[in-house]
Length: 477
Ligand SMILES: Nc1nc2c(ncn2[C@@H]2O[C@H](COP(=O)(O)OP(=O)(O)O)[C@@H](O)[C@H]2O)c(=O)[nH]1
Ligand SMILES: [Mg+2]
Image (cartoon, rainbow, N blue to C red):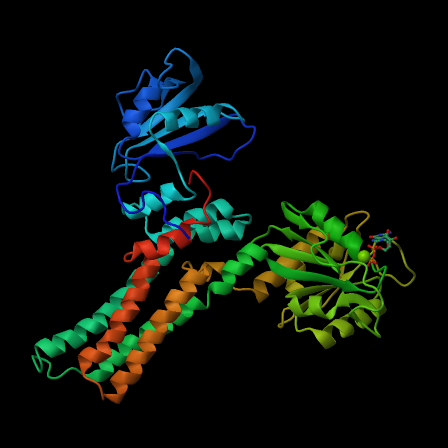
């Protein structure tokens, strides 16, 4: 993966990059960080402000052409170690666009700075102890967040929820190790010989806590990719129209990915507490994996990945047939939707509560399904609000509650380290319970578990993990 310049020396050289996204924009922020940041900045900014942490208007120019301004900038500088990176940092707010930021960066490079690598500012913050690795990752997640749920998870991690949970786990492992060490140093002191059950109980508790944490991984995926909601029903039931109507009504459309699959169109709608990945089975051909015989338009594959299926039909008969077909192939929660309710049909009983935003979620049966179909019209928009409310209630009932776990693991790196820690604890447990090996040998497993947790937090062996973590960051962060 290649060495990162400057990474060998924790003090590093002085780096510069535009922190804002490239392209046309009112303003751009350029960051300069490192031991020579102030010297370099003084060469390119006139008059230079004496006081740190005060936004000051400065003329920016090339070091050798002080009379040819590149821009009028607002400059704020921070003296080490009280800065994001822990080094001297200068932030230049200049005009945006293609030319000015590039010209200012070029001037700073000519004056002695080096263009920063992706994630290098945050990497330096970690090296200087301003952030642990988990919080640094959370900054990346915050920037990449597209949904309220991903944003919420990133903020919690940035606030240290996961770091604190891991610190507690680490303390428990170190505590168990200390019990053994104490017993070796002072055998039979005060309390008599160490009770092996006491060590086992501490280890078991920690293993259980790690398992709880590992079980939160699906939440990260849910926050990123959403709860999968699939539209199913006979051809012409009104699925695609409903799909579009729900899109039009949505507060925030996160992404539209048409043509990503041959058989479906899907969109990610942001919602609370989880985004919704709405899937419309588009144009299935008869030869394809249509849920046959009952003739509804949805593939087995789509049904298999659905958490919720919106079963669409124009009347009770169609709804019953479509529900049976779905039920036979899927364990997803079903929500029955009576489509085209603007069209009066003989035998229809007007039911204004269905269209008027009544608390329809109260109709949910104990297994989370809707007892009464929700009547909607893609043409008039009737019932769409109620449908969204019922869908939200169903998602809440069938998905994890985000409030329950503030610490959530989000990455394969987290899972790998926690699994290592867990395996080492299990190995310790086996050896300790058998009582065959001397205590110091058994304790090496506890050491290894602690090390895995330290690596996860970023407390040790920084070199090995930093490259992997920061490679995915953007320049200027
Ligand atoms: N009056 C009325 N017609 C609808 C409504 N929804 C769909 N349609 C019509 O029903 C037909 C089939 O709709 P479409 O959404 O393509 O159904 P799909 O095959 O299930 O995707 C089209 O002619 C639509 O214009 C509705 O809410 N009201
Ligand atoms: Mg369709």
